[in-house]
Image (cartoon, rainbow, N blue to C red; front, top):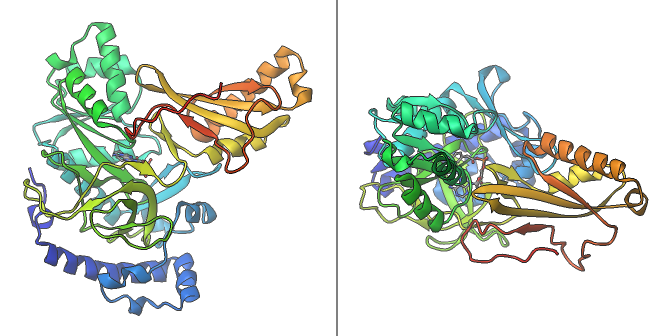
Amino acid sequence: MIWNRERETMPRSELEALQGELLVRQVRRAYEGVPLYRQRFRDRGLRPEHIKSLADLRLLPFTRKADFRDNYPFGLLAVPRQEIVRIHASSGTTGKPTVVAYTRGDMEVWKEVCARNLAAAGVTDEDTVQISMGYGLFTGGLGWHYGAEHLGATVVPVSAGNTKRQIMLIQDFDVTVFVCTPSYAIYIAEQAEEMGVDLRQTKLRIGIHGAEPWTESMRREIQTRLGIDPYDTYGLSEIIGPGVSGECAYHSGLHINEDHFLVEIIDPQTEEPLPYGEKGELVITPLTKEALPLLRYRTGDITRLNPEPCPCGRTLARMEKVSGRTDDMLIVRGVNVFPSQIESVLLQVEGVQPHYVILVDRTHGAMDDLEVWVEVSEAIFADDIGHLRGLQSQIETEIRETLGIHARVKLVEPHSIERSMGKAKRVIDKRDVYGTGERPASPE
Ligand code: DLL
């Protein structure tokens, strides 16, 4: 079903005219409300009135994740705190999270775009939607929650975790739509099989996934083991959360809600815009956000755009499944992890050397395993085993407190981690999340 036929099937010329008008308004909002943008405009000799149409987009400065860190927690907000009705957060690149905020108007847009994605996947007001994404500060749980309610579906707000209960509720409440990360969907399938429950025999029919990269082979696995049609959805906290784009029944790319999110693809090195069809970094300018009117936000996600109309009737451009990152961000059990966050934890621990390796794998079925190998000093290494164990659990606790997930820490001998002449290879990700077929060797 098409939730907002007028907007989702608009001729592209009309859509572009609308985007141009919204961009002009948004630039003013950013300039007037956010000191960082006033400064950046001044540095470039740019005035808001120089931006007259979409063609002027490339005159605008970029925004990066580091700008959130430098303006933590509320420095990028364009409205007084009184107008903020919701705060969420995701991982920052070091110790502090990336904080995002919503006005009442932003909440209206958010539920609208999430409802569109759900409707595109075939969800209706007759469905029962179990939301098994985190509700905490993560945007996934509450974003889908409001979208599904707006659509008129029945929401079961379970959040992530407690897998046995998830399986029981799917059966007992006749759940038809399951919202979770793709890796959690596979994990649930495994657990159900172990419990002797055949989820294919339940009423489940649609899976709404996303928040992490996944491959076509994972899609097939979810389809066969859960007996559902899995849909890819994409979004990020800085822009809104879920609701930026999602697949329709044709599964041939993710329709971007372009009346709210203006997209470009750039070459991450030269920062020059690339034509439709070329692969590069996705850059998004939200067109209606009030609390956080970001300009040209560098997502770090690699994809390409297709503006051709889709057989489903939507004219909204499609982005290809995300195929990589421009930086070293990992997504582990649905949580964004920057190696620099782990490094900043290690640097605060006495006796630990700045030499470490982060290993990610899926050794126990579909669940991600995170292991950090850390070199200790000669003095510490010669210490008794009790002291070493204490240090190990101290680092594990601090990583959990900073990242919100568990990592197994292994202390290793001085000089045992290979030194690099160039950029150190800190991360060994054996999961092949983007389906490139590369499985790097372990450091052993
Ligand atoms: O993951 C928002 C979201 C929630 C999207 C639920 C979809 C469903 P963050 O925690 O800020 O927000 O993480 C955003 O996750 O820049 C991508 O690198 C990655 N990501 C999100 N969706 C996908 C996807 C939410 N479908 C970061 N495929 C983004 C690949 C994805 N990567």
